[in-house]
Length: 390
Image (cartoon, rainbow, N blue to C red; front, side):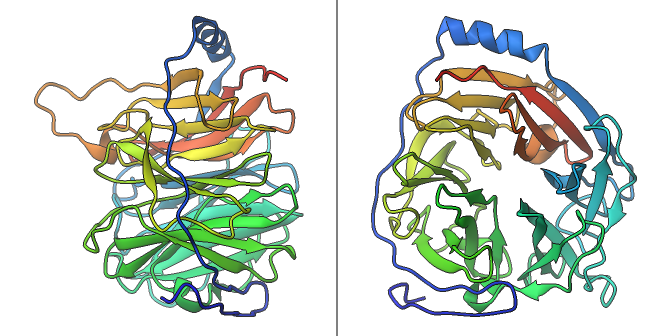
């Protein structure tokens, strides 16, 4: 890809145009939290609540890629990757469930009918992002052959809170192949900004590039910016799953997963996501190679859901920064699983909590999200947020 060249791909709902990246900054240190924040974290913990949404049993044990959103009609909805006992498999599909009582009870999971499984049951579907904006739901998903080969990327929209969906539309241009669109933000100017991870080699996740798609017209046209690497090795294999945070001066920080490094990586755009560095650099935030999610809390305040351990996805923790990710004084473990029995070989996603994803309540008092436990249980969690300093 010649990233200095600009291209336009107008389609019915979305088009993409390319921008040019340039090098920016690195990461920030994470000092130990103060005793006051430790006490606050303990007081907040007693106000949390959780509910099991799905408890998988073979031959359909899988729970993965959970996305919890508040829908336009006020219900809570969760999409997830399910079908079969593991992933990737041809049985994998996208499922949806609703709660009409603020997460206390949930409807039976329903497979989404998006036109792929109906034609070929061997096609696997994965839902990395569910965006709700201005009364419309956007489901970004990808389809593959059950082994991450023949990977194509699509989106579908719903105007009735997820009960019916439009015909799937391909993400145009080079991002139609081997691309996952991740958690969006809405900027202070009202732009939609979607981070993406794209792979230059198939059939698996080899040689990733990362960037953003920006729309200033409500999603009719998106422009593509950035072509960020996490490794200079063209043979590098790993997921990146980028997340975004907008600073008060309009600069954008992107955090990225970098498998095998033991930490998250970081790239910064000083001009609202238009230019980016060629290479992301390591932070001091521990990460075992797992998805994290970022949640703006106003001003330079931001929450981070993640696994703060360099090797294992246990515990699942909530950190809060009040100074734009320079420090993370508020830290608390939300869930900690017992270790596997002596001699056990349970590792990776089967050993911990994976893929937390959700939203902040309108009054910024709670972070509502879903996650999977050991790839077989989907859990809704309401985490009390600290009282935010002015």
